[in-house]
Image (cartoon, rainbow, N blue to C red):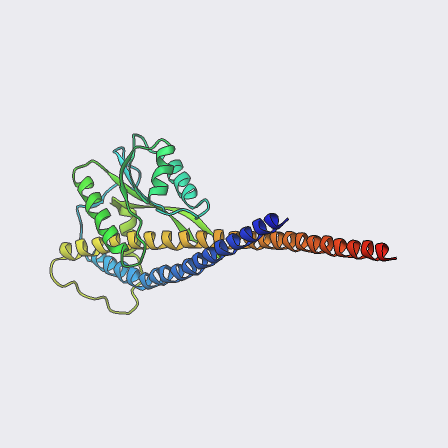
Length: 296
């Protein structure tokens, strides 16, 4: 009997230790969600400023070699960057974005060139039959996003300049209300005439339009570079916020399950302990009655 109660005590202690770890991960995930959502909100105003700068450049008639006349899809090879996670305990986070990317890329002719951000989504894309061009480590803080975005820009621009990639797409999960998220895709390159017209028609916040200092093409190239940078940065930050939201939801479910397990274990322990006490009392009473009978 003592071995059984000791075994239950060990299980209760192990479950309690696991619950402490789960609650620490919950707190960490909640904290990470805050910093990534704050980064996304901070990008909003800057992104709008970049759009206004592009709008002025296009109104003044500036052009760039990165623009193309058509608005449809090209027949050349397509490149894609899929943002996932390096760590587990995120539910179906990587499956959702990988399935969405695979389904979207299946509509393009030829074999796409895919970069995966995160080992987990890399494995998921490889299982789906995609030939992956590269694996990039998922950042673990806001500060680590900038070097990753710079690396993606360098590799993608090199591929585009060599005509190894004619279109570039990004796929990531975007947070929704609560702890939910939805997969999202965006085409970054090439920049087409439809995109140019939409930016040129943006309303200017004041009555007077600003003047472009220096060369119009030079300014336009700088704004386009910032546009690409902000788009990738926002996609990565939204993906990280979604990842931590998914992890938080998973840890909340785990915490609830551990609570139920602890209640069952403690109930079994108390019943077993009470049963042992009852047996000991019964033996004492039986012994007392036996002695009393002998004396009589």
